[in-house]
Amino acid sequence: MHNNDGMQEIVDEIARLLDASVTIEDRSFQLLAYGAQSGDIDAVRQESILRRRASDEVRAHFEAYGIATSTVPVRIPGLPGMLDRVCVPLRHGGVTYGYLWLLDSGALTDARLAAVAPLVERAAAVLAREARTGRPRLWDFFSTDPATRAAAALQVTGPVAAIAVRTVPDRAAGAMWRLPRGVLAEPGDGPELLTAVLAPAWQAGAVAATLQSAYGTAAGVGGTREDPGDAWESWGEAVLALRIAEHVRGAGPVASWADLGVYRFLARLPRSEIAELAVESASLGGLAGTVEAYLDRAGQVQETAAALGVHRQTLYYRLGRAGQLTGLDLADGRDRLLLHLSLKAAALIAEPGRHAPSRRPS
Image (cartoon, rainbow, N blue to C red):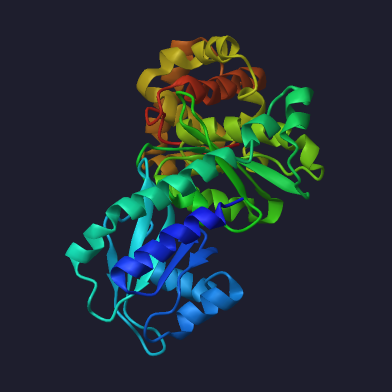
């Protein structure tokens, strides 16, 4: 709940000092407070006051000026039906928590804006404090402990899916706050820098893609759960899917648990067992990509040779050499299965970006 009395005092004081029409909105463009009208009014301000929030079209127009990441006031030129205005991002700790809007008749110089900087900082601090105390407790909701999940007391309607996103400090910090209504997001404080997200199942893929693009890292989407009380299971899958997205070429940058085939089973194994399985293909060295391409294509020599851009005889030579190095017979189904699984396991324990060239989920 916003402290509207405190925010209204800030708005009134800024309006008095600048003799301008002032509004404050949160980062989702929900109106929090507004001052008395000074001079002309336009349709955008009128709509915001009457409906208590900006329309999606207005929001998109303003965000195109980079207000979500700007560290300085942004001047937005007028259009038919919209007056010139200044947007002052309300930032605290490197995160944008809302926006101060000022209708500008041309009198709002940089010096005058600087004069209200302490009030702007105060408003940003208020919003930041309320954001922290009003956190959705999503990490508790995803806990494996039933008592912790119950204490989170989130009211969510299914079906839902969890999303795990690898985040980067100070990069697209406000991205999660521009997500659709009904989507919960909470950054983590641990060393892994994960953001936990819970979304309606039908939106999960698009939400994951939006956040992954904003942070430029990777994301994993867990399976759908009809009962939100089982969302913690989807979260576990999302974390594993994220791991696969980061290690397996062709699976990322957004990996959906439902589409990951055998990796769903391998990723659940303890790391020691994955490493033990990976040993079976470790001797292949630079031939690993060739062998995996061959096995991924069910042993189709012509198709594999074409995909690798080599002659069939070259492929036969490489496969023969692979058999010598591993001691496994690629004509034997059991040996082929062992080697195939070993190559998939090797991807999961390799450093991200150091996998073989053909790591499509199978």
